[in-house]
Image 1 (cartoon, rainbow, N blue to C red):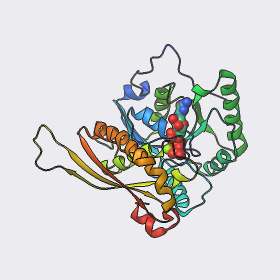
Image 2: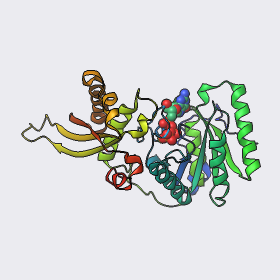
Image 3: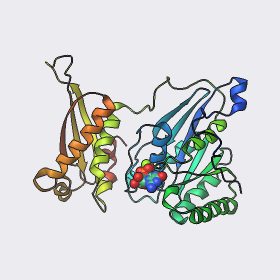
Image 4: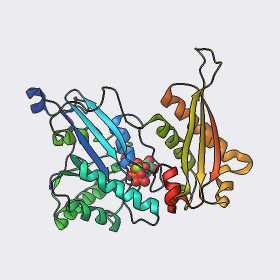
Length: 328
Ligand SMILES: Nc1nc2c(ncn2[C@@H]2O[C@H](COP(=O)(O)OP(=O)(O)OP(=O)(O)O)[C@@H](O)[C@H]2O)c(=O)[nH]1
Ligand SMILES: [Mg+2]
């Protein structure tokens, strides 16, 4: 078993590309996706690699609902990370659609990072995904043990061995096994260094400086959903969807004092959920507005007026028509 750790003599920010390629003067560009069960830390890792939040995260499973591309720029390489929804046993039409998205993605990428949290025993959920990965022979796979800051050295060693054994059992050859912590920024650069050589040679695919290809409107809706997910429990996180209806610069504003009007709807599935989302005297919704507005302003670099409404879209997770309307 070979497990990668960053040698302390090697600075974490050494530019990253493999030196052989640098010498040859060639450039690599390609796609890698992170897969793993819900809550494994895929989106947090994507953000850490990109160096900016491109995907929202939460401690609720099934936070990510569409593929999000985050772009890592290096002098000799461009690594496009495709963050996917957590693969799980679907219970709704939405769940099935999410799984389809994941499977389509990993058929198209140049490398796959299989994320397994360090702090939880490998379970049926991980095994289910690993079995499917075993069927994709041609794509190199890196096993990424995430959230290493949550465990001690011994537990981590055990997990690394378990991941190695899982690979042997299912006939998967891990190109690497890499322990990382996205929140403590441990070995994140190393992971990029290991992924880049797996990319094909070729010119950059995105303009320099682009960190994602997510439309602004979608990122704004996601930031609102992220704020709304905080503190809600049980089934409610799954019931929330956010759609930005309109983003328009306010007219009659002086050039040095612009204001962007954003109209967004927060959908839930049942009238009974309305009260929970809005909170006593509207406090929860107000907090969601304040919190997400700050993030949106930081993202867009302009002051924002956020007009947020709560609406019921009955059982939207199971209704093909509503799913289409909500962008799935
Ligand atoms: N301590 C610690 N927590 C982490 C780390 N990475 C992610 N988390 C936490 O784990 C939770 C899930 O993280 P996400 O990145 O949203 O997980 P995900 O795999 O994208 O989840 P889905 O989108 O639902 O599939 C969040 O509460 C994160 O803050 C880490 O390196 N260390
Ligand atoms: Mg995610």
